Image 1 (cartoon, rainbow, N blue to C red):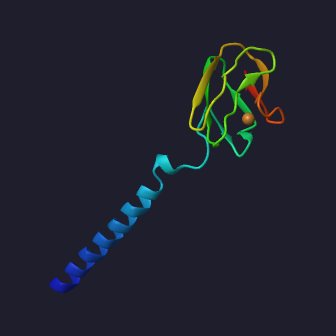
Image 2 (image 1 turned 30 degrees about the vertical axis):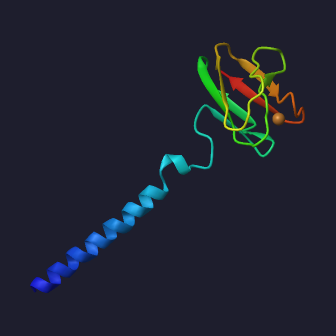
Image 3 (image 1 turned 45 degrees about the vertical axis):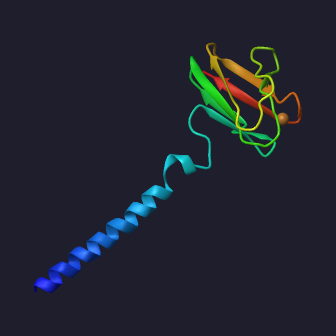
Length: 116
Ligand SMILES: [Cu+2]
């Protein structure tokens, strides 16, 4: 009887150890998609290409590529300048509207911020 109880404790301990490992794999540092109010510049594209936020939201772009990109408003409202790999740029959108932007180095990279 005593042996059986000890075995159960060992099994529970192993289960917790496995669960612990699993939890570590899911830590935020290893996420592979942008968080809320965040745009990744990745594989020569803006991800997401269309983001919708409330008025007075700050959006942060992160260049995940090894080459420089820019975040350039089509109307001149915002301009990041060159963002090297790993660099970030933030802009707060204070007026509702639809804001198209591009990478000025790679003009085929286009995206939109929708503020409501
Ligand atoms: Cu670019």
